[in-house]
Image (cartoon, rainbow, N blue to C red; front, side, top):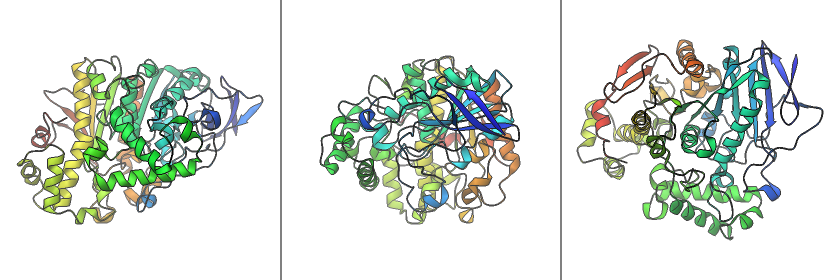
Length: 492
């Protein structure tokens, strides 16, 4: 059965299945190509008649994930220029005033889309929530710092999508005054960037950041260095005019080459912040679109009135070390050099070893990088929001995957299928029998937070540091691994 909804730009026809209406590939902005390339998002052209919204629209220009991640992370690529589109799942049109959840995908600001099967929002709609997933410009198209082009175009796309939600949610049964943004990895970094952006103020009311917080944004100087390297590879100037004349495929090739060089080089003199976080295409603190580093903006009150849910996974970095075999190639010397590069003192590794007596150097490196990249930034953001008078709830996802002989642990991205209550599409990471009870618990907490601002456990404060641990047996823990947490005090 089909359902028709009239949006501000024209009517769309979705498909109803088991009481859930799905509308896919709705444009929220014009195609960002031709004269519009590397420009700000512009409104889509209105249409007459009824536009079919039965299939996902084009995805932003990108390459497949490299091996072995192409076998672990689903990432459909759909050709076409009309890539600034979104998807809506809502109870069969009829209810009104529903909470709205807007998902911002991850992928290191270089991959991903709202069409990933795990991001199917039908389970949220089943539970009385309007769910939206969106695409935004990635890599060079979305984040390269180019003269004559607005900075942070990918973030501006996200703002345009949220403006579409504000203007159209009610037509799908949603309440534009009850919007929760949520995202994972680069999507979570986008969420925290939106907390810091004046242009996004008032477009959402709650926010969930999964495995990504407010520390990882680059300075203009670093962004300009990376853009200069890109331009040199392409043989053009680092300007909007010069880059817009190049085929997207050629730009993607140069983008991949620069990304690979950044991953292998890691020289802070050349790469600045990218030498540590390995994200050459990420938000830049330009002073306008993104006025300050997000964690600093939140500490100054930019997220006043917004309730936060934030957390990380126990073994995030193992996704990047175990499937590649790198975890077994790390030497003791490399471990010490890396720990020093992240700012840890000479005795810090002994603290990590104390709770992991059988750990290899690769295991310890995974724990250190997990903390620096994910766990500690999440806690810092909760602390910053609390200091500014806001409320945050903190979680840790601890369920260990049985894949790779159990060595993946509770790795990066593993929790996403549980949040969407769709663990089936993620069997490459979860194995064949993921605990459905854990999916029900996480999905239920996210839904409750979108409805009420309370996911089901006490808010975080620096005295008790209350944290919900999601595992086969979910439990509330006060200040998990405090000795390791204290090692990072005063760092960044």
